[in-house]
View 1 (cartoon, rainbow, N blue to C red):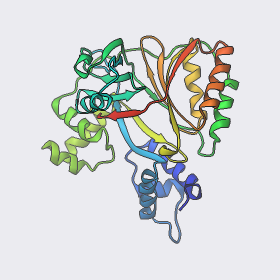
View 2 (view 1 turned 135 degrees about the vertical axis):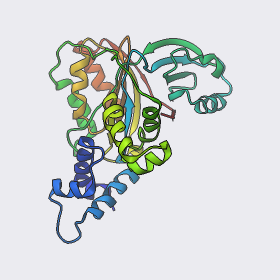
View 3 (view 1 turned 60 degrees about the horizontal axis):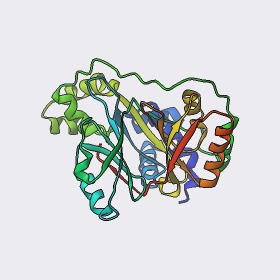
Length: 309
């Protein structure tokens, strides 16, 4: 089965799940008016599984918002030694306190951790810069039938206005142990059955549902990814962007065919883009520089990733 044959179906499913992460096949069928021969809720369940299997989307997950009591920090690091790159990656990957790590080059690393005092020297790295990571943004593409290169070329044609991303640290983080336990299970599997989670947390399904919906979800960003040709068929660019037009620049990203990741820092923001041509990407950003929308940026082509949270 070619991806293109069912792309509109996959996008419709992705959109509905993005609106309601726990929507059930029967309700999806009703919303899509999906009925008739060979069109049952079980068929939709198959399409959802197939969508994730093909890498067109990924299972929806939760990302904890940034609170004054708890927030992730960014660590830009460098490996001075030219030896032991693989060993360094293995050590970082085995550390549960590092929730996200990117090897930007054979010497440059980006680490994310809720431990603001993380000692990167333990990995044989030198700390270059540390920053608070404010609540991130994960975009939802407006359409499934966008040409990647054309979409990037059209970015400079958007209307831009001055304005920065929100850099507020929220207050009032009040999770109990049960909330953390539920998050540890459902953060990466939000469609898990409450009865299954309750058993692992030694509580009842009713209590699990109440805590999940009233305590966990409101304190998280809901994340759902979309990659029309499949995740593995795109190149990934990791950028550090500096701009006085941050907000409207990010508002233009849903015009791209793939989900983009945005992590606001104290200075500038991290932007993870999925593309099919480095040349087209660079040309688009060159135009944004000429228009004075972007003051400057750093571009990396990641060679390895590690995600534990």
